[in-house]
Amino acid sequence: MVNLQTQLGHYHFANVFMNASGVHCMTTQELDEVAASGAGTLVTKTGTLEARAGNPEPRFAPLQLGTINSMGLPNQGIDYYLDYAIAFQAKHPEQPIFLSVAGMKPEDFPVLAQKIEDSAFTGLTEFNLSCPNVPGKPQIAYDFDTTRNILQAIFAIFTKPAGVKLPPYFDLAQFDEVAAILNDFPLQFINSINSLGNGLFIDPATDTVLIKPKGGFGGIGGQYAKPIALANVRAFRQRLRPEIAIIGTGGVTTGRDAYELILCGASLVSVGSILATEGIGVFDRLSQELTAEMAAKGKNTIADFQGQLKTL
Ligand code: RRO
Image 1 (spheres, rainbow, N blue to C red):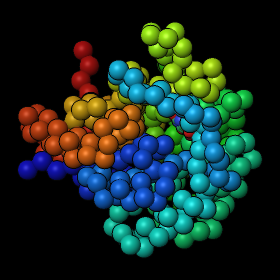
Image 2 (image 1 turned 60 degrees about the horizontal axis):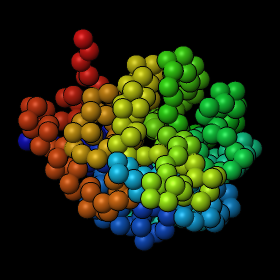
Image 3 (image 1 turned 60 degrees about the vertical axis):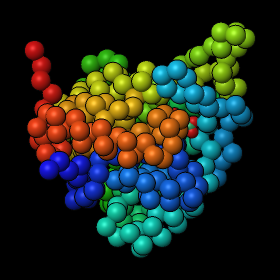
Image 4 (image 1 turned 30 degrees about the vertical axis):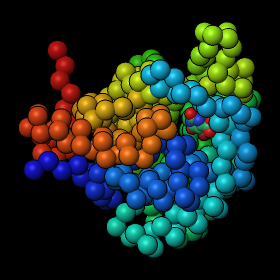
């Protein structure tokens, strides 16, 4: 019998699938809908110290093979998501969830960390180092010195299970350098990858861009991202300490896509674009498809094939 159970550190999940932060997780209603779906866990929209309205609309568009977004970190603020997570864990002690947070400046990260440290939250915290869409704010994790400094500031005070959301990298030297930084900290996980930052799509009928912020530049997700996601998960699995688990994110549209991310080393699989375009029923479809793929390959558990990509 195939089962989709997985674990990350000492946390157990009934199913490998979850939403990607940003999709279907802005409000308590959306979060409750993910919780009630076929997903194994959920993550909140990335919360900042203060609530934010985000960028002007239109700021999201579906594409033929994915999505483009420049939301600009709209969110209800850390207190809203922390309150939700603490209330959720009281109701569902067996279902650990993820809280995503980000600073608008490096000094915000230890403030966020202290708030979570001092709270009753017992789940996992994802520090988002890779938002591509706030005008004037570069993606933190492309700046390796700042990344190290932020992790130092976080782990000087933070003792709860934590991970980082990373942008896609494209050069093997970058994987070496980033993994060396990450291996110096007591991370439970990384989440790889965020959207492909600053892509551009043009409407052929009108010769205009599809979204308003930043002249049309936005993060690309969906099938465009899958090969990059596979490579990032694989490259980090080969370089990170084995205790640092990987949440694989990027382009998962079918159960086979999830199977491939797990082959590359993912312990959990999150879905963004396909959740945004297909809706909450996607979790049941993906679970059925992954179960069928595993059965066809003679794999009963995630551990039976996790990280076991074959090379030539
Ligand atoms: O809100 C966003 O514009 C956004 C964020 Br914080 C992120 O991490 N990734 C993304 O594609 N959009």
